[in-house]
Length: 317
Image 1 (tube, rainbow, N blue to C red):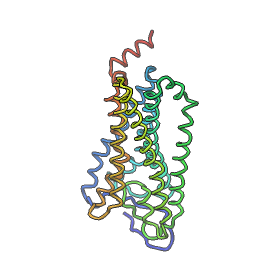
Image 2 (cartoon, rainbow, N blue to C red):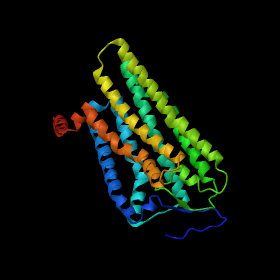
Image 3 (tube, rainbow, N blue to C red):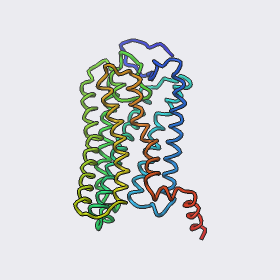
């Protein structure tokens, strides 16, 4: 690896050195992460194909699940290939421009993971609490009022975070102790004050994932209260809710673990922090399509070979 230059000018080229402490064992990380990458691509592609190809699945709930699969399909593409090449061929270099582009898309798509869970919670709220008005509320034009504000919020928040990071002078080191351009991993290399960046980063966490998870929790609280108070059997609807809650719980657990590992540095090896930082983005891309495919009966039946054969038979007639 090229020697790190120390000078007063701002670095425009960086080296991603995550897991360097593993030494000669580092290349072996290619195996588990490449397997996860293939699983993510295959499972999410299959889920999107099943939902798009089956007319019976062209309802708001399944369209949202397909949207989540598209996010989960796209997110790893922006950082996993470079990470795998780094493990296998020791290709660690990245320009500042490419680093900021990677940071923007990784954090933007990561933000939409939690936002999509919020839209799914709203879908279940309308389906269970106001079933007579479900089609009206989930009509494309009406649902846009929930989509557009959150879409703009995510775009704006991530753009501000990345723009502020790009304006920092990096005159100390050009070695990023991570496997992709994570925001704080880059900011901590700056030689100027980073108080604003840290504050904006904290505000972005509160305004996007934390806010989304509070609203999701409130939605499901109202849903379960409504079902219990009505005394009606809504097993199928609640089954879908439980699936969303499982996905949300797993995602939130990994996000909080990654967040706390960077705040509580004492006694936590850097490899552990980097691992959880990767997992909170990467693991949902593998986990979500599997859990939705297994727990959602309509998707499971449509994805079964007999279901696909019946669809082909119907089209031929």
